[in-house]
Length: 161
Image 1: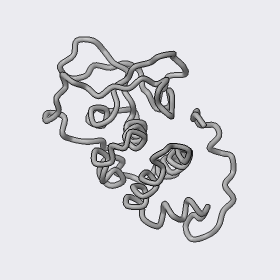
Image 2: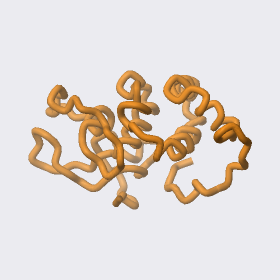
Image 3: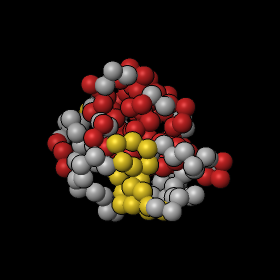
């Protein structure tokens, strides 16, 4: 997987449009590609988003556009939707958009760093509805029913805090 290191003022495709494009992760994403209005693609500026450049992949072609665009991978697109309060777009993320447990710990860690956002209560509630007790256990530092010390292993992820 190749991710960007740093580019100032980077505009990238995110949200539902990014979820309907393939990415470098082993995730299923969405399947409504032909139903979207590709003329009006949802974009964001990395400098204005919580996770800055994390999870933004190199430029690629997108439907109905000649030029190539940076695109959020599926996890990043979900995180952006949570930040923007677009919960309906990512409802069912665990089973339909991510569709495996490979990234659960990474997602939990990244979402937990969003506590400082003004809509944290809504984000927390959404995560509970997606992951049920697994999310609650994670928040209490429990994994598989036993308490574990959270090590700083996730600090290697390039995340704005």
